Every structure is written in structure tokens, then in C-alpha cells.
Amino acid sequence: MLPSLSLLTGMVTGLATKFGVAYLHKQGHLPQSVYVNKALKALENDDLDEALRNFKLAAAKKRLTNQTEIAQEIIGQAMMLRISKLQDKIAEIEGILHPPIFSLQYLRNLLPRERLYLESLREERDGFAQAIAVLERMKAQLDE
Amino acid sequence: MGRIVKTTAAGGVGFLAGLLLEQGLESLTGLDFVDGLFAVAGSVLAALSVNRELVRAASRNIEQMFGKDPLEISESEWKQFKDANPKTAEWLEKALKV
Image (cartoon, rainbow over all chains, first blue to last red; front, top):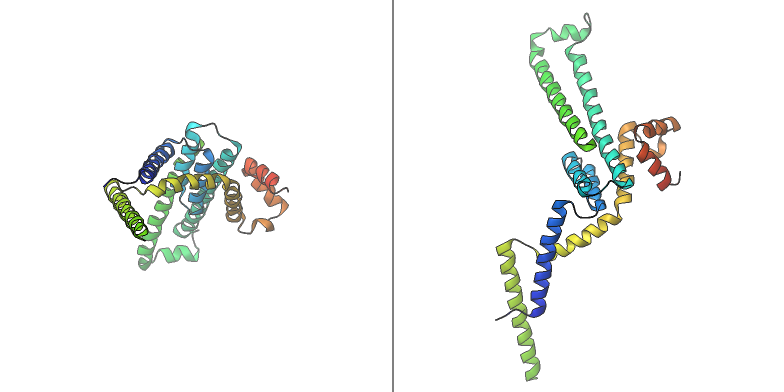
């Protein structure tokens, strides 16, 4: 039993559209605004990797428009804000790890029971520093 | 009456055959045929809503930068934002007719 002509036409159209759109999307051939929109949505979900990936696709084939440049600035600022927050946290941790001599914190840090806590703070600080390095690399990629 | 029954039966068989074929192809290829059409429609909608998304994203950045609603920031805070993000600020001024 053969399927009807309309069903076949629908399926062929659907397949062509599906493959066509997927291919065009992957290659960065869709309108810039599509990628910019996706990048901004990703930014809203705090997904900077996805935001950067979509921005790069937006800029891959076409010259940056005013809208795309603004999106670039916004994504870049979101990265810088995150870096700034992480730097604040590192400064806070450094304040605990290296307090002024003769302060209460300095004396407290000498206690053996604080050793584990201080060690966990050092690990946290190193994690934040790594995150900053990653974000700075992403920012450099964004500005390329 | 017989004609109606025949037409209905043929229609039903055609529908079932089409459904089976579509389901079969979908399970074989993992493709949803309607999905492609929605992707095109989604792309058009996305293109239309970029300006709104830009305003929202900029607004979130201002909120994170100053810890308050963009409507509550002072003149000096706005200047600070403008220095850091000249293109965004200029565009916002035009878009919001400030």
C-alpha cells in the first residue's frame, strides 16, 4: 500500500526543512538575530559557554551589525561582572587566610582546629582563581 | 450509504498507513518531521524578539552591577555604566527614548 502523495510531499518537505535548518544553523548561515537571541537566552540561564558559542556563530559568516555589537558588549560585561564577583570572594578569603598580625583572626588561625577550615578555604580560593582564568579566556575569545 | 462507508474505510486505511509510515521513519531516523517547520517558525520569532532580549539582558547587567533596579540608578551610576558599555548605553537611550 503506497502512502498518499500529500503525505509523501509533507515528509519530504519536513525532512528537507529539518536537515536544511540544522545544516544552516550549524554553519552560521541563519540570520544573525537568531544566534544573538539564542546567546541572550543562554546568558539569561547563566550559561556563558552557550552564549559565547552562539555569538561566535552569529559573527562567523556575517559582518557584525549594531545589534550584534551590543550583544557582544552585554555578554562581555556579564563575564566581567562574574570575574569581579569571584575576585571579591578571593579577597574575602585572603582576608581570612592572611589577616593582620595581632588581630583576632590571626590568633584564631593558629589554632589546630582551624587547620581543616583554612585548608578548605585555600581550595575554594584556588577554584575561584581557575574560574577567573577560564572566564578571561572566554572574554578574549569573545573579543577576537 | 455504501459509498460513504467505502470512502470512510479508504480514508481510515490511508490515515493508518500514513501514520505507520511516519512513525516508522521517525523511529528509524530519529527525526520529527514537524520539528523542522517549527525550527523555521522559531527562527523568525527569535529574530523579532532580539531587541526585547537585549533590553532585558542589559537590564540584568545593570542590576548585577549596582545591586538595584535599573530604574533606581543615579545619574552618576548611569554614567559609570555608559563608560563601561558605551554602545549598549547609547542604544538603550535610543530604544527607551531617554
